[in-house]
Image (tube, rainbow, N blue to C red):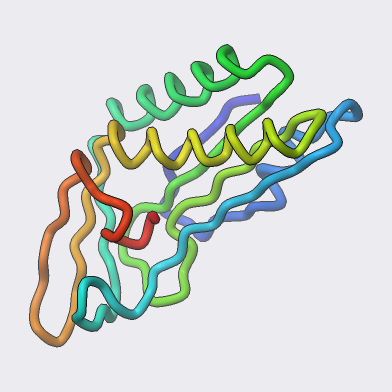
Amino acid sequence: MERHHLTDAPISVSTLRERLLRRSDGAIVTFEGTVRDHHQGHSVESIYYEAYRPLAGKEILRILTGIEHEMPGVAVDMVHRLGLLQVGDVSIAIVAVAPHRAEAFEACRAVIDRVKKTVPIWKQERSPQGEQWQGWQGEDETSGARD
């Protein structure tokens, strides 16, 4: 089954779950990053996400296959939404399944941490004060809707 890790449409976490879940799994961990109404002391009305799609798709696949290789028995998948998102919209969804919960939690956390560091996705925060672009490299835990 072909995976699409970048989308312009709303994200379906249930589709990710159904694609991954196996009879041997005892744990399913999901993460949904949503657009929030504030960032570093100012209000946010919406966020526009943009990506260098060819590289972003390859990097996401490299992250997912790397985690599955490092953590035998774990399966992971994710999708990131691009385009204009409003407060409350899901911008990223990650699903990790494993025989036990510890591995599923660890894998889910590893996916989001690596995506934030290496995938070429940019965001433009839109607020009453104006618009501001945020880069994809070096984001800290307090920035953006993806933390």
